[in-house]
Length: 173
Image (cartoon, rainbow, N blue to C red; front, side, top):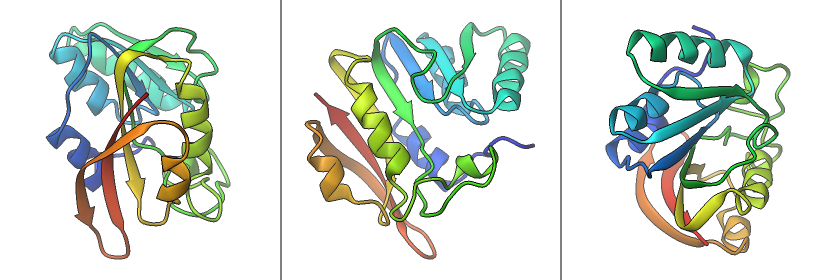
């Protein structure tokens, strides 16, 4: 499997998952979040930068008879509409991505948050009034910089891993 396999961060999201009427699964990877939201009756758009991840989710959603709109997209590049819920398990570890597979975990620069900051700047145009963003962040990220972006932030949960912590945050405008 080339796409990001469900791990501690995915399971943290699943533990607290709630999906709006219209949900965007940004960076869908394995597609497990999109599938769970579709099973709950949400109209789901699932996007990823990796064409193999997009195609695998397309196949899996057909097998499970779920309607998931799958798209190849670098963040909001091919996503013009707005959503009630946006879910993102971003690449949050420091480092530079050398290829598309590395973007599953790295590519966030020195603090692991370059993709996150870019996402949050763009997300404001794609979240409905009263909508929510569920996002995984890491203790490597500059949480104080993220907090300055104009979103109301609420930490939902955290998990200590071997060399850092991950957090699940709810963000609202």
